[in-house]
Length: 272
Image (cartoon, rainbow, N blue to C red; front, side, top):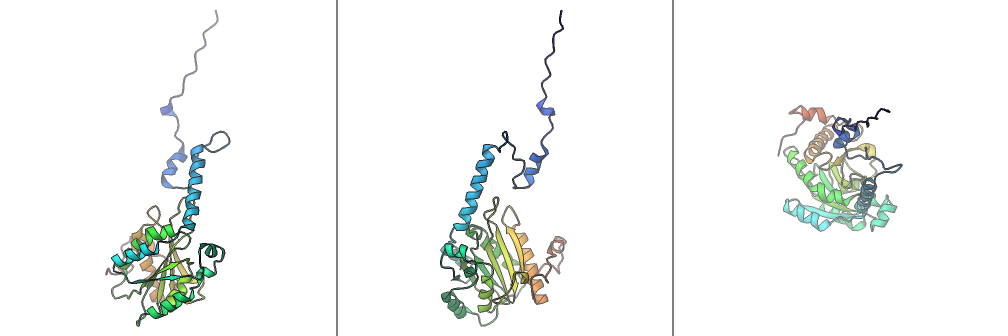
């Protein structure tokens, strides 16, 4: 008689080793551990990529709702005015970055007429940049958080709402308003996991011709990235540092993280 063959034991699913990549996905929105179907990605991963790409494209072309921003600024009690770059529309803005760095003639005249008699310590610019969606969602909450943390006695100029704007447009805005410092709150170039990321650019003694090396940047401001409170504390730390140093950019080091986490009274300006 031939011996009966014993059927192979089925693997215990509970004993199978978990894929470590799946655990890592809890800590990032980056496209890792997508899996595969044969030699291709799973259908849901392909569809999610297509959706993210469409959201990024939409964010680039979405127009800033200037009236809604103005209404929110009125509700917050913040004086404001609207300006426009020399790029007449989105097509010119995307094809001609240089036009987005300079104001049109009407905006120059508007800013000259609104120049305060006393130089503001800081002027905030709310700009569409490459993601008006980010500006619409995050600029005002961030501005409010920063205002609460500015040193007592600092003069804030009128908030400027800028359309078809590049970062360097803040230089001309700050110069025409006579500001000691200008802060651009501007939509960053959308990524495939972050179509609404806001950037902050600080320039001391703004004037036309400033270079990127003369600015400080704080990026990825959004609920999934740097929170409003964290960004505001870092921004005010840099504003105070630039005022004391007399310049911004590569000479102004952002070592706010250890200082703020330690609760240093010197690093944290008094609340207004």
